[in-house]
Length: 390
Ligand code: PHB
Image (cartoon, rainbow, N blue to C red; front, top):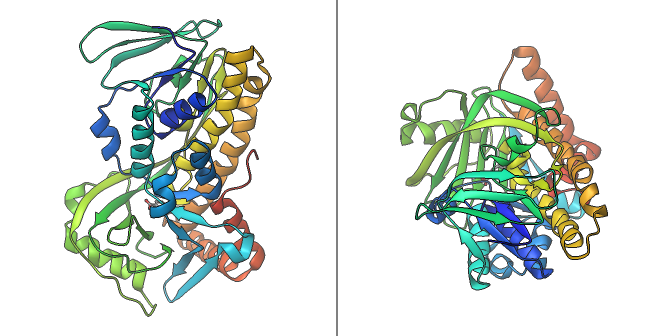
């Protein structure tokens, strides 16, 4: 096979890139190790920055989002006895939108299928070759067992943190920064109307808790648990009790429980890989960076990467102009590090770890963020997304 851009990974980054390239008259082929059902069943964070909504609109995949996304003007930040509303619209003039990553992926899959995009699911043994030349290729075994090769002008790794593309950047060139956190999140999806109008981020001596949502009928919750926690430790009763305590202590509010439809333990990690381009190989989304979910930045960063990459690849492929491709890695990494810092800061401010001294510092920091306009605006500016490119 020959195409202009070979894309490894059919998550939101790979699909959106393919859609943005098509809009510029650039052909692509997408390969994915998982099945389409698996990709669509993955539950991920559900917050879109304004700039992400604009990128999806520019790609022509925002029709359902415009109707169904829930606009939010802020968040609640709380600790026992106090709940504070941070009003992002008032603070920085921007909102965010609640629309699950699953829904973004569904919209992208249907747009790509309608356009007749070549998408190969359930491939294996994916490998990239000749990335230090201008005729790289991707080889894979397709679902029927045939070994295939895609020759292209550029290859883009949108294959997540475990995919092969990141490792294809030679060791002598690749640098990785990593932080693991000594706790995890227990994520819970429940068929119950949210008990809040805005997301609640709660600091609590028993551990962080959060109340998010997916729709007017579906709520999403998170509880800080030990890093190696077994799901069996968390029967539904214990979940509701912990959520009630951590989200409700000392505030005049009550949580409505309902049937739990899914629960899982999510690891918390930060990782940045540099450079995000080597020769004809470009990395985007989780293949290049992982953030803990506390700042809701993962999907937004992936969207920002491909919004930057699509015009750069179009220049490269259509007119041989490599200037924007040359700028891709340093430009993308500036935003990546800003979001890496913000996600780390939110995470370490809100989770229990360390001793009483750490806890008092966290509470002081939270109070400053809630009470000072400068503190609140700093959080709001980062949470709603800094302008593109940073
Ligand atoms: C979610 O709805 O899954 C969610 C929202 C905000 C976060 C993390 C997760 O910071």
